[in-house]
Amino acid sequence: MEKALFAVYNILLLFLFPFFFTALVLFNLTKNKKSEGYVYKFFPAAFKPLKKTAFQEGVWIHAVSLGEMRAAVNFIYLLQSEYGKKVYLSATTKTGFDFADNLYRSNDDVLTFYFPYDFLFSVRGILKLIKPSLFISVETEIWPNLFNILNKKNIPIALINARISEKSYKNYTRFRFFFGYIFKKIDTVLCISDMYCKRFASLGIKEENMRQTGNMKFDMDASLIAGDINEKTAILKKFIEYKTNNSEHPKIIAAGSTHKGEEEVIADSVIKLNKLNDKNKIFLFVAPRHPERFDEVYKLLNNYLPGIELYKLSSIYASKDNNSSGFSENKVVVVLVDIIGQLLTVYGICGAAFVGGSIVSAGGHNLLEPLVFGKPVIFGRYVQNFSEAAEEIKKNSAGRQIDSPLELYEALAGYLLNDKSAESAGKNGLNLIARNKGVSLMNLEYLHYKGYLRPAKSADKKTVDKVIKTY
Image (cartoon, rainbow, N blue to C red; front, side, top):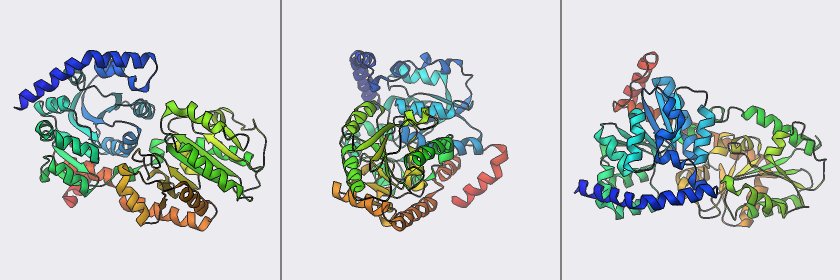
């Protein structure tokens, strides 16, 4: 039965191939983001860095996009420092690929490439080039042909930071007659929470192959992710000092990972706040989640002129002296963050942060990033992707969940106009992060315990001792 189902699956893929390929070519001609890297996803051997690499045994880590890539940074650092492993790192999206490519370009032991489509010829193509001893998916990506071939080659499959959304869970359950075979091929699942463990168990993962280890996003280290953060912070601080004429204590708001429909809400709230605030100059940094919306959001913010001063972050970085515009009273300074990878820098200097994808129904984005810098976080009701983190933040008074534009305004006013409130929430956030650190190392220790990893000689005794204590 399994062979028949895989045969049907691959016949369907072959039938769809010409339509899929044609659509991607058209997307590429119109510069649609969906086409990024499509040639390499079909034909991995066309990617020159893969051609030039002298392959050796290593670990294949797949992280779909920017969020998963950031979550994997500390894990990869520990994997290399404790185990000395070569890493083959794949991404699906351009933002994920660009982040990894920039971060690891000078690291000869990390090779970044685009994740192949699940066509048989694509999967076989990548496995002819790289020789992984272990495949690790950060969070959850289920690919039938890839998992089937890895399983036949006796290459272990592990999911770390694993979770399954309600929608995906329903789909896997609905097509259990096929996906049941796929889930049986997964060797280890390390979940964010007990709820996800239960979902994986109901889909066929055995209890002995599964652990709840927590969320690796608590392990985020800004110094590893953004190496130039100090340099960029200095430029922004100089810009802010100039715009405040060195005479005020500015109030800075960061709106990160925003979606369509959220920029207006945050801008309206900040402008309203500014009308009641005559003591401090207010700065608003707006970072859209998707780069293709930069121009759209700039035009939207332009509608608020002349009541605001509007800048692009790229222009601020390009102008070393930041003196292109003079000091002005009673206007909010709005900066569009039009460069990928600069959100952490902005979180580092803000007084309070709003995390987008949460007012509109997008599932929310990483609520933990502002907490790493000791900043209170504000978010809307739609945080399905970070439900556990949201509950912990509320429980520990490290931020606020809002349900309307009025509540957003009140939350911003509460933090920005009350230093003690912001300071208390910031400390609570730092304590929350500190209590939950160590998940990346725990995941590595479990993979070692299962026999998938052998530590480097220099780390052997230390790592083995940790594993014995843990298991």
